[in-house]
Length: 258
Image (cartoon, rainbow, N blue to C red; front, side, top):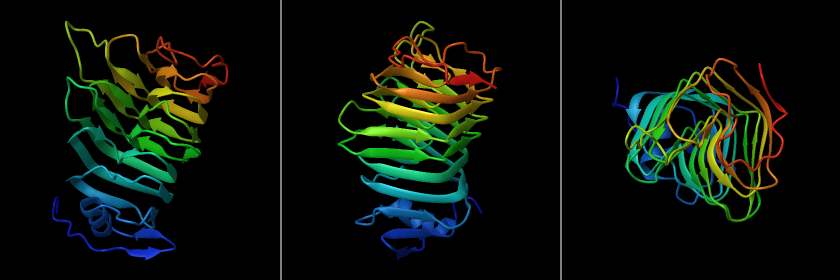
């Protein structure tokens, strides 16, 4: 039944927790990862409507093995995302389905996304690959992204490759006089500074509930030179802009309507 998942300690193999059921997932979610940096999914995880915490771990390596984490919510958090914030990460092969992410303070500068709420990098290449947000609801006061909400302008790079956001709703919660002038809202990523690579990503059947100039089908605000983007988007989204008014991606020709 809902909210009756009892945490059970998962095994650790080659430096990674092996997640085989909801009980093992909740053990990590409630206690943190400690000194372990790896997380390997060995089955689909249905959390049956449970409210969970963001997983916080710098240097996290997640192997999704094409499994799905579904039916949960993260609300009233500063960074509302499955992985709340990280300074280094490599996340691959994971789908998040039917989940709700809502940041804590609708008048503040919080962030919400399916995978990463806040990324403050300190060197190296960080990868989100073959990851998918399906039928999710994502809302925050300032930074909203289908996959990643906010990427800080420190050193290091991000590659978002072969990912998608499908059938989801993205909304910015801060309004004043009917206008949302704070929100950075993008189907793939809300805001980033410094270079980023978006490669072969897809945005389809999503809706935006946001006002103001900093929103786009792929990116809310692109504030880092040397960035690239490629992929597809559904032509029925209702937006013309792939990026908001802060757009330092010079060439969008490799992002096309399906």
